[in-house]
Length: 467
Figure 1 (tube, helix red, strand yellow):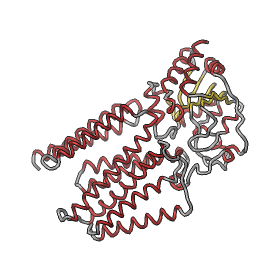
Figure 2: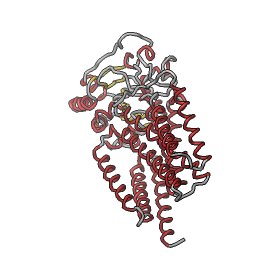
Figure 3: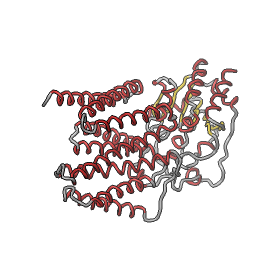
Figure 4: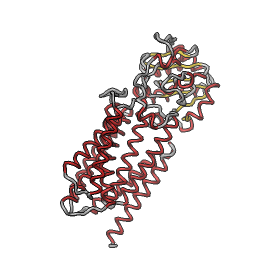
């Protein structure tokens, strides 16, 4: 091994180590920022290593791609709102899957040109990364469109859907087998058909999945992308890609499993259950008429909060949409000045992606020890004076406990209804992202404070100050 090769190998090793340590630091909010920085340094080292390896052979294309990608990344980090972070994650994840599919496409054409002859291992790697990468790319684009509300977030189903999906999958398997048997010597149209079929399967895969399950889907697609990237590493003989892809694939898979457990739903039910396709008030409440709720004013709620002993904030996507996290922190500060004990209840699938609420509250400098996971906070609700729900619909729905006909029956929820008083901040009585009405709003200990979440919280803060 030459000195240059040794230096490149050491640089890749350092980058891999930084990725592993960075991923480990993401285990805790207290070290997450450091973990991101370590991973960022590792990526910089990896990019420099690739540039050095390609000097004189297409290095300019790598350099241009790095610059363009860097500019897009910086712009997105500065301009994309926190409420749109799930959509951005879906897009970035799709880009990784698409890149893996493109590399496989290039390797296929290179092998057909006679420059490189592929063996059995490379043939299998090529076909797997092309299929998985294309599925991840197309599925992530559909997830983005659903989250961005360009298309409906409800499940899209049609008669014979599973049969069509199975037919497309069988076609992909047939073409993949042909490619492996011929060691890549199949016609160009066949490989193009393989890619198109994989893209189609990615679209069909995500269409029947409802918006409430989108955090699980994003996590699963992320694991797909990691797997595709790791397999791509075998094609181009890159240890760096193999290990980094394995890290992403493994972490995405574990997160998908944990989120499925948090929802008490098997992954097959998430992928094939079309959750939310027929959700409605009759399913959740057992009734047929409009919900009977009790409305409260900001002054009424402020009195309730100011003279409470313990208040638990329950953030959801409504808080993210209104960008109310800083206002919530300001209200919590006012309550703490009055001697009120404050905590935040974090459901594993609150928001539109894993950790969505944690990121928002960390941005508002909420102390980490006040962020309580579902298992830790649920025993606190019976001794809580006020549970203040800010846009969290589905994760507080008691139908999950006591309505067997409900689509979310059996899903662990935040036991907010056990608090002495429940205050729900909502714009209207519109159902949550799962499309299921919430009987919590009709309970005698529940009050509704209607309006924009940020404006409502600001009004509460002003009212508490005035007391």
